[in-house]
Structure formats: structure tokens, C-alpha cells
Image (cartoon, rainbow, N blue to C red; front, side, top):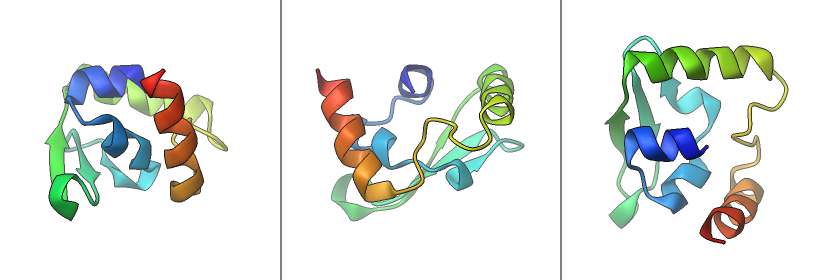
Length: 83
């Protein structure tokens, strides 16, 4: 998650809401849903990060550390990251 924060520059609250389905690894971008101002936007990242992310998702198919329940993962994620 910290790599994602570093490589994309997304806000912490946005980071906590990202799901695996939001990534387009071929186009090297991710969808940020309900960002600042409740607007959706795409954030770009490099090919090297796309490769690392693809590997991470393949190695952790059941829980790639993005959470399946958007609401509960947002609360837990934001509390941990902000510490």
C-alpha cells in the first residue's frame, strides 16, 4: 500500500478505497472512486509498478491487501496509515 501511495500520489482516504478491480494494469492506471469532491478520476503509474502489482496480486489471490469490503477496509486502513 505504501508503494501505491508513493507511486501514485493519491490521498490516504482514496488509497483505502481502492479495489483490485479498479486497476487497469495494461494501461498503468487506477480508478479513484469518490475522491475529493466525490469525483471519480484516473491516476497513472509506471510500468515497473504495474509489474510489481501484478506479481503481488498473483501471489495473494484471496487477499491482495486492498480489502473486499470497501467500508470496513477504509476505516481500518485509514487508521493504520495515519498513525
